[in-house]
Length: 583
Image (cartoon, rainbow, N blue to C red; front, side, top):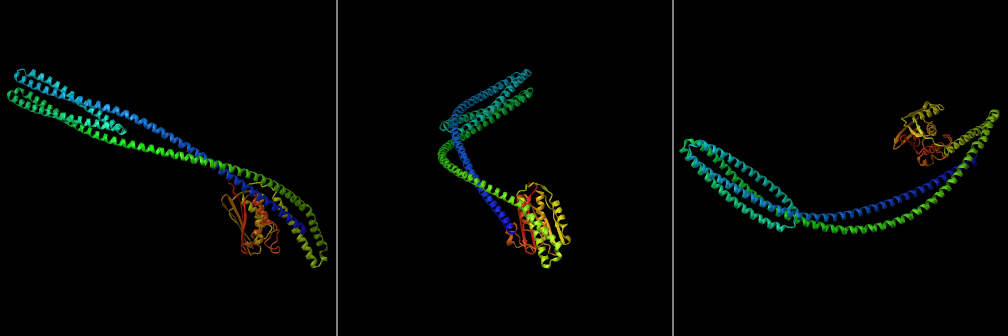
């Protein structure tokens, strides 16, 4: 039987070696593909950089064209401003002419007031000589008062027109300020015209002084007229009312003369404002000159920017040439990788064929073990039992011991064959993934296992078990192997404490089985999940040494991992992970 086991072990090791070679070949292929993907990413990045560089070049060219357009527009604006400056200067001349015309109109109105005063004096003389005709004179006086009120209303309208014209002048002056701030080309002509305006304003102030003198003369005349009215009061009692009315009219005239004085002062103030605005025009011209200097600086900066843009274009052309060279090298590398991939794929195909052939040999061997080896073992076991039943009394103690050893080893051989077949079938069994109620599954396994052993000293603590995804029949075998091992290796303790639980980590559920049994030395951990590898003797704990290998194979086929932690003669904990339901 030993050569058969050696052949089995050799076949399994050969199978595992071929799988490891295939795995390494697959890993080499994956690494090569990753390198190819990395080089493709680098190629895409460089292509993207080239596209970005071209976009930047196009953008800079657009900026250059925009700045050239801005220079053209600025030249057009400067020409337009020059034209506007000429128009505003013409408007200023027209405004000065209008102001002179209004001053002439004011002088005419003052002359009319003087004539009106003369006529009033004449009317007073007529009133003295025609006392009898007082009623008629009063009517005529009332008529004249109406005329004077009309003229006063005309004077008020004229004053409003003057105020309106002053507002218009202020608006035009504001427009002149805006225009002067925008212009800087004809500063010398503006200064000459400003000087002329100053001279004109001085002449206007002189004319206003003359008007004030004439207004003072009017006031003196009015005072004399009031004195004559007092004399008239002594001469005729009947003219008292008329004189009072005449005094009231005189008072009104004085008020109007005072208003004329105020208007003249306002005119002088306006002239002063014009002088201030002329000074502001000078400042605006200086600002315009400063702006022209700024434009020249900006034009120089544009020239420097164009030079830098030309340099950047040269750099980009060099970089484009480097990118072309890099692309050529990348294509060569891709071709080499493609050839390497083809060779690697050919090797994978050859290794796969070899592995399939080995699997077929292993399948045929498993079939042979299943059918050819079981018959002799059943025969050995059957004849041994016949021998024990029929000739047991004739055998001595040594013979009975040898017979019992034959029966025990034949059973163990049958168990080894069953475990070996089960391990072999795991590689070919299709994994059917579904949601597993892990709590119910563990409870059913517990009930099955505890029904075959003395559970009086077994303390089984089952924590909350989270559900997971997997093949329920295979995962049930995992629980059977782990829980039965925990019961087996803790059976020599006074009480067997077994704890089963779970916790969630990332997208996995980690389950564990912990016992207070014999444990093992962690320096032999690498042998723990090997086929036919045992860390305890058969005399201490019976077994075939294939249960944990089955556990590892089932868990790995579910995309999980299995590991263990142990302290010799204290405790052992086995862990395995499965995907969560949400994965």
